[in-house]
Structure formats: structure tokens, C-alpha cells
Image (cartoon, rainbow, N blue to C red; front, side, top):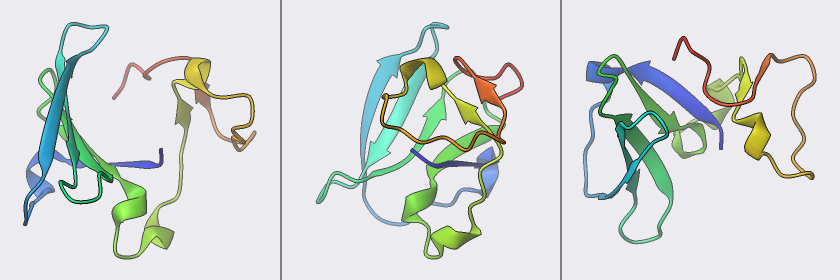
Length: 97
């Protein structure tokens, strides 16, 4: 999923969403927000990080503003998934996120 990371307090949410919580490998709680009507993944938050929030770039009013800088969780990628060979790759989460 194309993810855009924004400063935690910069994300202002209008409207309703449903949240789903899971525990990550690190033990933090990951919250994923979805549209309650269509199920589209919208944004998330991590209980262990109050500096950035992931936003599904495909939900932007203008998704062309998104330009990937890296691929992560490539160890979970499907064989058919094309990843730009010029971008840095991380097996899981990069440590600086």
C-alpha cells in the first residue's frame, strides 16, 4: 500500500471511521482506520510513535503528489508485486520510522 507519513499533529480528521487494533512484532498497538461504508484503508497510528502517522496515499485528493522514497516489509511482498529497483529496500520496517 502506498503510505505517506505525516507529522502526528498535522493529520486532521473529519468524518467517521472505524478503527482496528493489532499488536505489532515490537509489542506496540497499531491502529488502522477504515471507511465504515466502503472499507477503504485510510490512516493509522502506532502507540509507540507519536511523531508520525501513516496515511494511505491513494486516498489523497491528488494522489499524484505522492512519490515513493523506499519499499519496506519487502519480505512480505507477493511475487507479482513490482517494486522500483532504484528505491531502497527494507525486509521489515526501517529503523528510522
